Length: 269
Image (cartoon, rainbow, N blue to C red):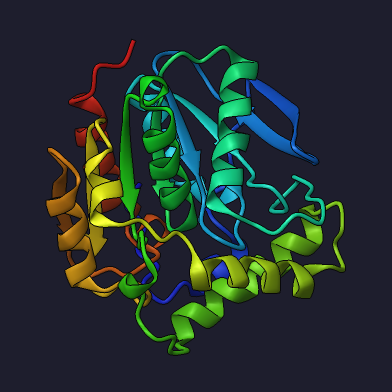
């Protein structure tokens, strides 16, 4: 998909490309939440985990590319995001990883690939450490695995456009459409303190991992991406030039080519 939306003004106005009709939609109950998801096509399963405050529709440019490449993309709205509900439990990446595992069990997926963006990347890597026998590999885009990896927040027009879209999508999709403020605060509390993996924790991850970092990421330190690639056995490090934390929306072709190269190297059955 040869789209360029560097400032996310198109995303703000219209969202990502609308998703194609799903082969299956489902809701899985897990630990006090109802987790919404959708499955597309056939072939090796690839689970896509969106970022904080977003929803599965943010992958609109990736699903068609994965289908064309012969994969079965599976989307999940993280608890409290999109169409999924949440209870009063504090957010944690461990809890969201358990939600992903519940979806995998519901769909009878033995060992899919996990593609994570921002909070979704943390969730995927937490799942890979906890249940490596269930994860074929993790495409880890744009996140930190301990608080030192995050940059101090600085507002920008790009972030403003993204946030505005998230507010509109939450109102349109959520079972609690007037609750965005409390929802955002709860997610932010998790992000300030989690995850908090040590180098030893990272060294315990035995699955293939691609650390993918954008040249102009607004939230994640470049040296942290290097540290992750050095600390996870066998991990690779890929830099995306000319884009930021929102590369899947800004330059989908660049992001998709990088993603599909990683998936092609995995043992997916």
